[in-house]
Length: 337
Image (tube, rainbow, N blue to C red; front, side, top):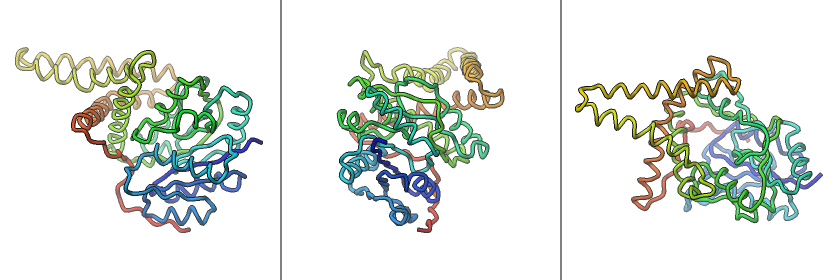
């Protein structure tokens, strides 16, 4: 079996982190946990379980990209011969058999830089927002343009492109995959269970902030790689600008001149909802899930527009956007080591 190491990242994930680390420790590879200033005892727990721990320096802004890079560096310092690296978020548990499947895929095709499988939501019925995450994770099988936070990567490919861009606060995996593909590497999504994710979203505000983060990711990704031939997330940005900004502003601007008739333009959102519903049904979603998805994708355009505005405001002011988190801000419960 080719040599593989694990890098898990997290902040105040508590028992979710315990399940994450227990799913990989003891499998033969080096396990590194990168902590972003947890206050729930995560560091002590990770060490007690046998993981090597990296505690990020507070003087530099936290990003998942930075955490993965530092975990990658630590892994190579502990195991310089490591060929493949499995990244996993601390709120995810790796499914039994996935590591072996991913190693087999990468070992059998030297053009593959990344392989990923299916991420599932652990409690999709707990809230409509968890359900939306579960729908989001269900992406097509085959050669892909990007991966998510859970994926196994070839060390030589990751080294060649210089790792993740630590300045990207969201959408760092697709940005990395752009550079990997530019260097001739392929990304493959296989029909295999990979991880169980625990979003723990129970409130509308959490979902809204997650969509804001997505809008910021689209804006930053377009700025970095929007030029031809890649045109990374150009179409997504145009849709957000039209539905989240242009159309509502147009309706308001024309309200007085038209005597309020401009409100008719809001019917465009019904058209968008219907088109999104049709797409969801073609994906095979049950009617109730398709309606849920369509409704939130339409509402989400306004949250994504907020993310775009946040990014461009920061650019104009010459400052860096702070990390946009959607998990509960309540004080974390200490975990037992």
